[in-house]
Figure (cartoon, rainbow, N blue to C red):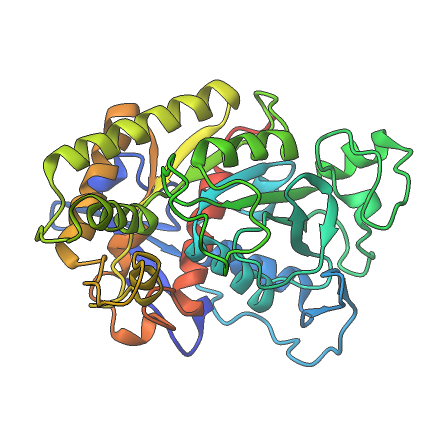
Length: 400
């Protein structure tokens, strides 16, 4: 892994032949052989194509819809690497596809960094009302609000972006946020084939006990339990078998917090060094059940797991306070051992169920401390590598 803090578009990552056969990553930009080992090298080529496609800075008004900005920063991306193969994914591989990310703040921040760093004023990214996805909200700090990103990829950047024409919310929306009537559904459907769309909902792990209802910082949350939030996704964005080309899940950080909060609630202490095997087996059962629900709802979608990454040692201040009733000091929930145990469980379930794996976490192991912008969330270079992996997964799904 070469994570470039100076120029995130110049980052690239490599995987060996052993992982190439396990659905852990998709098309390579270059394959080379070192001794008896096959190595697959990939760059941030898709996010660079998105940057090149627009070539203008991102300026957003109060509704979250971008407006034309100045043309400074109109430089070309710096990673025009000559060894990118003709078979590497391109923007055309994304046309007409939709992805659903059921993740956490790492994924939400990734989309935000993609918007701020890469995308131009032909892109749209905003929050949705959880009870009606056709009601759009200004992009704000609401932690639990749904997000929707639409990237038009098959038209001239000079053509203005218009939500009423460009966004197909549920395949059959009747109004948009300002009350406009959408009259020509055929036009929307046609334009949907010239865009890629990513829907995101923050999940609170596999919680079915409403553990986090008291967290006021996650305002505008109208459903906490994972089952209820999945039902919200269905009502917001549809349940057709081909609604999504790919669905990616990550139940990691919130799972470790769930374990600790439950331990304090039941035993008034968290004395285990790692995670008890019984708890890990229960976690895997929850994960299997969740995947089964996803597959029964969106039967043609590829399902993938994003593995949990390593936060900074001792991280988890917000989660420690979330696990406290009154006073006291709680131990960090994200110990190295617990993260490794949970990641291993994720990989076991993925192999058992034949899921794709976005093993972004492995690429971040050993990076210096600067790759994280705080104790948990990656800075822009790490976010763009994650975005690249998401987009490559989507590019390699079958077109509708």
